[in-house]
Image (cartoon, rainbow, N blue to C red; front, side, top):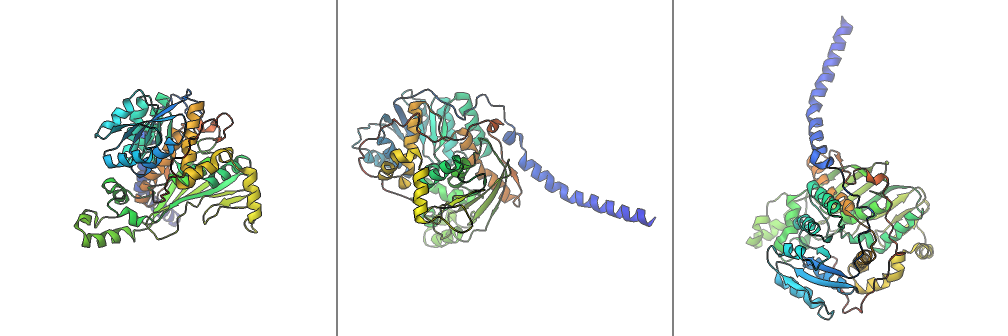
Length: 479
């Protein structure tokens, strides 16, 4: 009888515990497994490695020519076999600034300032590529519309802000067979390209763990009225929680780890600190300037967000995002393998193959010479002279045009754009649900198992010329 009583108590306790846990499990299931997020329709075409028909002379329409857009217009004006066909922005002064930067280039783009003019630019038959540098909310709508009207697309980061938008990019790219490349310029920074080439040649052995970040103290800029149109970047920091800008750190390490090409991201957990900077700064500004009052008293995104990602093959990635703490700029860029390690921040980039310490300056020179990527050998110094975050922006644009002209696959495709961007909404869901694990959609729907790794070589291209530089690009690391 006593044994039966103890068993009854034990069973009752377990049942009670199960009842307590059930709502938690149910919530997690609802968050992780919406049919619209994880089980979209089957692919109609695999865009990974897709070689679009060659376009010898690339005609470009720019949508959004604020800070980043103006810089892109200038860079493209320095590349041969490129025509800048159209500039579109609601603010005419932004267009005028862009025109001034290319006044000696011979380019004569048409001007579009109407609210719906971006659609007209996408509809034009004399444009091959739409280059999108608007606020985040316009990225996916403009990219999808452009592809549906027969245009290849380059879109600023993040390419999407919701899981549904991520799927729209993928499905539209597949259906139209048009490239959709997110302009993740950090994939083209010199140390990132070096470590990618080293990884491709087995220097690090099996990659085990990587880290990336966007740690950039821009609180002062975020609270400036003239920093972004309608202060949209500040609004994003109280409307959304989580990692709002994941792709700078994530993109380069995903390429190193062959994500979407032999491995896939499986799930993530994310946690954010409270906000100790932005809210206080805005409240202080509101006391002196009534125009800041609509932004006062908001629940701003925390200073630091940390997200941990597990891959299908058991590897890990740590991502961090902090734009308000007074810290030195860092994207971390750490690559850790079974035979070696690389880390860029603090500067300069460093390499090691043991626990004894980093390579000496002389050893670093030997490594950099041996593994220097072909694209850097060809136009690396020229890219630095043109500018754009030290030259990586120009490397990205030149490489994109060279691929389009030679019918080569782009280094980043719609699956990358969707996957890297998806960390924003997924980290937000995790943060808002006590850091629960979030399943990450497989935007390739299984094609990652056979997709070939990124090969940023110029063996079958590299024939795109560069014009005499009209005027070096003024660096702006606040973007």
